[in-house]
Image 1 (cartoon, rainbow, N blue to C red):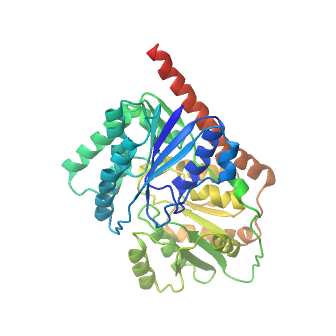
Image 2 (cartoon, rainbow, N blue to C red):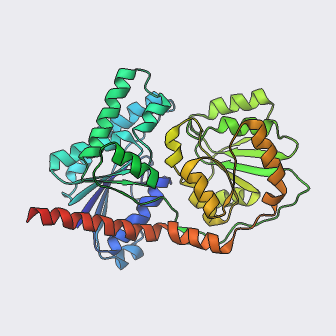
Image 3 (cartoon, one colour):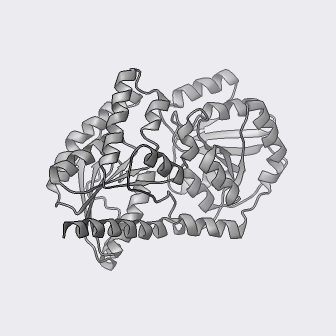
Length: 398
């Protein structure tokens, strides 16, 4: 079986889809599939590959990366959208130059990638598997990113039509599966997000003491989805006992910095980091924040990929989340979640501060969490799903 993957982010930059699919591809190759990846290269290293020669020697399938130079940058939502649609002009010819696959997979949240996958599947007459890592098209409506309602309705219909035309749709949460079925998708399954936990050579170090402020860390993308303005408001009324640090960059950063200035908060924002420095920040923190804005209903069935990384390293998690993400934190005893207004959350959080500083993960719960959400295990689950789907398609041809 030959699989072709279209993705907006694969490497050499590090991102959640790159981590997810680098692991999945390795398991697909180990099971004998050939995999071709079509993705932009936003850096100058044209020789980059996610798999070492030693890994490729051990697997049975063949791997090829078809990348195209794409270094356009954008900062506002409309310019980002234009840049992503410009990427289609490079992605489609690149995909057509690669060998014809048995299954074409497109992984979304980048909506233009879905458009590219839809077009390539029609041109080459190959089955399309759509992986929805975010809750589109609901996010389009909730975000109000398109100011013209007629255009928004047209975009929602187009996204839904492309989803419904796929031979299979893969979601990352059960709640989104239910929503996709409600929207008319006929063959939908779930392969959750996770993390390659054996990448951690150590677990979080703890040097907590109740004689200092509670160290709260948010490390990740600073976008509109995270709703971090509320975290700043909580920190502003909790200055006596909380030390909030936000590490990263994103489209919401200027607004967040402005809000912090209004609240009189200083030494809050730090530039993005990678590698060992990420773990140094995790070691600094007493608790790590996972946050999604509360006014978008689709976030009830959204689980931030950062949650799996934090839990795997042994961090205490504070969730300003609802639905499935909140339930994961509760079921696997990963930390505490809070809902309500700013003052009530601050009060509850302060009451829990000493417990957070002294917190240790439950070994049995953490072991169960890692077994359930290990990306290597999920990769084999994904391959079985795809192989079964391919066999069904071939059976219908006979």
